[in-house]
Amino acid sequence: MNYIFKGLKPFQKAELLIMMLLVIALPFSWLAAQYFEVALLVCAVLKLVFEQKFKMNEDQLKLKWAYFIFALTWVIYLVGMIYTDNTSVGWAQVSKKLGFLVFPAIFVISDMSYITKNRFKAIANALVLGCILFFFMNLFYAIYDVVFNGAGSERFFDQGLMKLYYVHHSYLSMYAGLGMMFCFMEIFGDGNRKVKIFNGIAYIILVVFTILIRSRAGLICMVLLFILQWIWLTFIMKKKKIGWAMGGVFVLAVAGAIIAFPQSMERITNTISDIKSEHSSDHRLVQFKGYKAVLEENWLWGVGTGDRTEVTQESYKKYKTKIVEKITPKMAAVIDEVIDNQYYEPDYTMRRDMMAKAPKYGVEPDTIGKYLVEYQFIRFAIDNEINAHNMYFDTLISVGIIGVLLLLAYFIVPLVLWIKRKKFDMLYFSFLLMMGFNALFESIFEVQLGIIFFCFFNSLLFYMSFGTKTIKK
Image 1 (tube, rainbow, N blue to C red):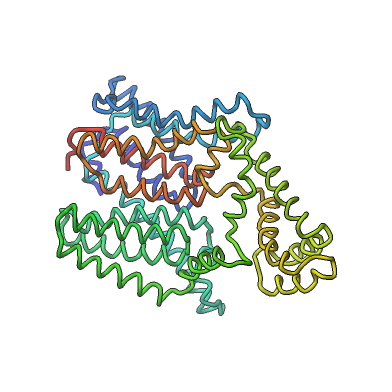
Image 2: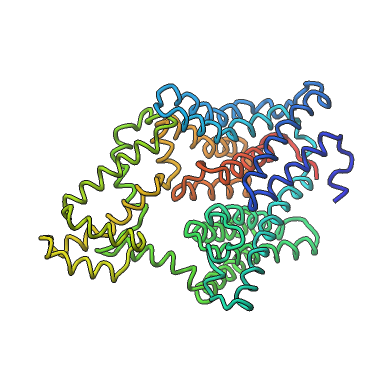
């Protein structure tokens, strides 16, 4: 570890250490990670004053326009305060999204030329270490519960696994996904045999972790990363024999995971069945029907930074009223009573009972079968103030099409630069693919778990890919 810090000035050492601590802390505590974010900003300013003497890295300054575009994502939420009614919620949103301003600012003012390939690997290894420590901490507690307290197999999956300390599985799968990609690049990189073995073991652990936490988007994204890794090996690196061998391993691994962990695969198969079923649905599809009108009416400027929740709730209630008109208020009251005493999730027994009671209230049983699940999900969305579960739609609702375009700039700018420079960064591309994909199913920039992770690694990977002509080993 000493060689990582060898030859660095005091503030450079502090800055690198804070980066490593930030990514280790991410799976454990977003609050701790946020404190490290503040510490990193303070360190960068002090470094600019006392070590750099206000002299900034010329290579980084050449790309200040890109960092400026990235920072505009925060600015547009500030502008959205002009036409928001709920200012208290609005300012909370502006404060929450400061990472979009802070991290680009850090990577403009702080000379990052000391970040060599090995120092970057140290930061990446810190993320891998943080994920594995979090996994083992919860896994050992789950094993203890099974052995000594008689817990069942469900203790090893999703929220059951994270009984000791819960973090939403979508974000954990993103952390693990980036960690897997880094391990993969190291396995087929220039490292020595010990490094390759270490990363191979870490890769397998992170795959198992992703399977057990059962994020649907995370599982699909892991398969996409498998495919991307195979393409990279086979067609970009021209290692066709290794690529086809790895392709076979990936296929066997996926087949083995389906057999060994059917509980994880059921989340995906059940979702597909629910979407296809005549009497079922997916909660995100129902929510989309609920806020669709808001998108159509406010796509240009949005409703304002602080009004998204309130306006979305009103739209959900209007959609609920339409369903009540179909099933009648009396039947809705009967369903409400069952929901209040049980849970919102669709249940075959509940559907059967409600369809049986329908004639008593002058409703066709098929009408109840058609609208029951939608009623349950829209009730859940209202009672829990659920957002769009889609970052693009949430942004469109809040600050309009300009906000969405600025969000997309995070993905478009690197692609344009890669094409212009004819230089492709597999790790950075994988990161952007993973974040863009997860944003389709989760509002990942509505919580610090997503904001800090994305803004820090986007800034770091952008620098490693474009911020300097040559990165020393």
